[in-house]
Image 1: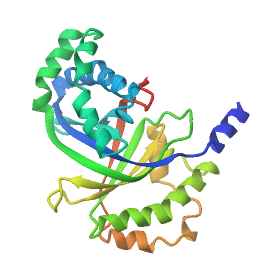
Image 2: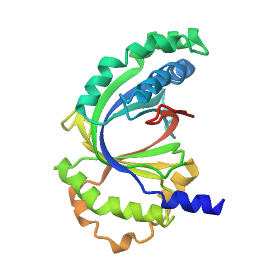
Image 3: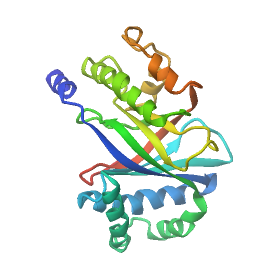
Length: 259
């Protein structure tokens, strides 16, 4: 077992850029079963077929953690290799909808959710991830923290994160000095402007909620040895908001559905 774990730690971390579309939902508490069934039993299968056919790099659905409000907040996201693959995906994904309708476990509930889906949507964002470092092979990331900030120069924010933080994070993973399993830095392409209070984001992935809280409450080994000033200057107001999401279901680049 130790040899297997050691191998996973030595598995090269894959870093790549990608476009991501993120949908934002607000669902009444008494309709969460309807919404989740729609995403898990129908849309996940559609995205699985899309990934199998190399139209997308992946898909996921997550629920906001620790926010007690009138409605439950959810997000879903689809990742693409580039703009052209994004266009091709949206032109082709529709053909898988009818196929998946025949595979539903709760067809009436899922169909109801599909009819109500539009009423749950509260927004849509488009991102470009200048860098995304995937988790070591065999890791199931179940929680993701989105760190949101407003930068006067979003491109410079990404450059500083890639130059300073990305190699530092890779080193932490290889030395098994962090519970964090993946990381990414993104610029929001749409919507733009000041309305939402942020235009850049970093993403931290973890296997358990305990790992998230331990990371938040612990000092990062070796952080005092790196110069964080360029990062701090790239987002002078600090984090606008840091949100924890629980990933309920996801589809990987091979089309496998992971719960």
